Length: 407
Image (cartoon, rainbow, N blue to C red; front, side):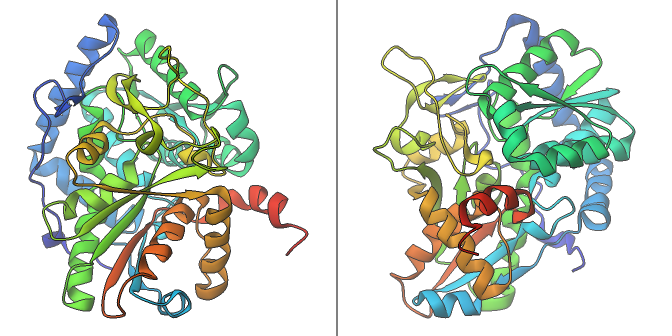
């Protein structure tokens, strides 16, 4: 599908204040040694975003390297099976590397090149951001180190191998719960010591300003395309737009461009073994305000302010916080919340696979589970847009362990 550049709006709407606050959320809570590099990054991003040449190069790569625009698919069989509203899937699983993450790493790698940085680092949970970072590092001939929790290196072994094939150095993290939170901690420590020559490509809409804004802007192509495609295919906007939320990059990518439209926006969190089990990753539904990874947001913490452990069948949602803009949208009543347990996500994974021949990522399966549940309560002439943020190749080991005997 060719890239119609008229779909893309480069204006920055709903921007944070100068210190990166979305209402009370966000900010730049970072070590003094990082304030200079963050300001340098902020200035570089603002300069690049105002430069038509930067966008020309970015759009060229998004079209000819990433494979944008991704299709909007009317899942007729799934819609019939569920009953109720028509379900449309934004097919981010069809991008190069198999997930939405490449939209952001292309933008940040171009920014790194513009700033003269020779090395990039990243954190990753499900491995898709790590693969996307390793991919652009290979293309731009940059040194690349990826921090990944030891637990995630085991359950996402295929992506670890992909990163190594691409030339990246994968650094397992054993501290804490050995998952995404801990990988991000280690990446921040690395950046403090190496910022003169290193660019940190954060993978989600979290972290200190300007990362939440910058990552949102690079991912806005998702919702901008989906908005235009819905109007083209159906003659109207969707009634509901649904995306899964860990940190929130794919959610902001889809939902931000629809924020000023009469569309119900739904964020779906990972309920794990249940919202009352203490084994989940539902920061908005069960969290409290606190500071994590450089920003004020909702996070899972105990009464003493210590970050609690999380659980999700999907490594990419296994994070105790959420992007500050999503926290602000929730507080402002702009964002509705839903959740899906491990069991519900796995059932949605199977249903889409068997009815449409599309194998989704376990992260996306959470959005599918809630989206199907919502669609079933609606009328046939209405529509639900679901962000299929990635494909399920990376999750085969996990699913095989859980369903092997049944299959």
